[in-house]
Image 1 (tube, one colour):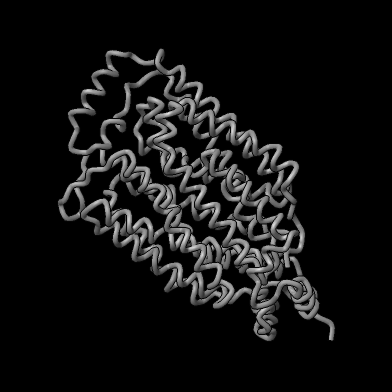
Image 2 (cartoon, one colour):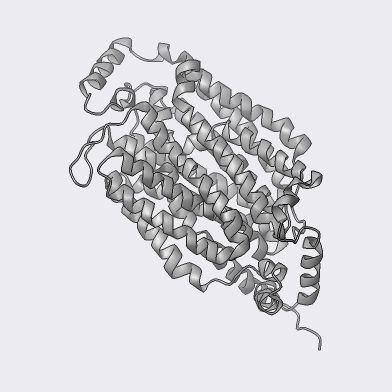
Length: 482
């Protein structure tokens, strides 16, 4: 009997269902976005009140502030390793449920922290949650989405990531840093208990694990009546038969696969050392070092909003222009933004009143109860404050347009289902090590290179990304990924 044809209205309903699945599976990324930019809330609060929920006082040095930002990436490393096995062993959906547990515990530890050590442990656990989600969520989305909307669908995770980033900064205005962490607890709890239990498992995972009947039911639901489900299953099994074995880790050493893995290692490195993660965690510190005297929380919200806008533009372009073009445009904007920021900081000595700067330094020294105060006090208002803010917003827009999310998207699209979790786990592991290094080197590089030199180094790295992307990155737009 011939299958009924899918009408336009039925297709819209089906795509709407897929969209709800994308958003539900990506909900945990909201907590991830809150965690990534939460150090800005802490840095801002320490300027006025360094007390905890229980009345103890925090004293953070520059290196400890770097560690607060980078510890999340340290925690993501065991998360990636665990997820590389979990996602293949128990499936995408259950792995996402597991990811909510360390995130909930970590956010709770931060909210109840009485010292720096509790904050660092909490950040480590939040990173573990983020790492597991990173390997589970994007493969799930690319495996349930229609090919023509796959790129835009994966951006759902980045949308929620940016919503979380904006939310945590906005919440930081009326609430203290430890109160904000209770909101992260609520996001993790709703993700693991209210949303994920009602999602179906990935049909491609079911197919390659020989659960054909379950796979057919899910495929009928998400692909519509026009799709030949039997043919889809046969195609999936054929694309995975050469790597579908219990020792699939060894498959990563095959020359054709190892080449793709190494290329992705490179694009993650260029991305991380062009300052894409530094923008999220250190917005307030960058603006302070540039002498911006605007309200730090407002400025940080503005930059986070630009990240959201960049993700929206990327969603519109990704399945039209393709991954490579978006990535090249992203690196170009990063290079321009950081070049302008570096030039402003380099020339900035002549734009401020030196007598006022001395007074501000004295204020910082008087606030010796919190070591981080000294460099965190804003310099006086100048008519040029908009320049570094605009430059950082341009770099943030460039980051969101591609260099932030696209390496993750490619790592989920470059490999077939049977080895997707292992290959993506390896790429994410190396990418997070690089992100940790970039975050931890923020203050030392600023000291050795000067702030201007640091921003120019980010610009040069982004410029290297242009030929790297043009010659080495393989386009995946509209192609079957197995």
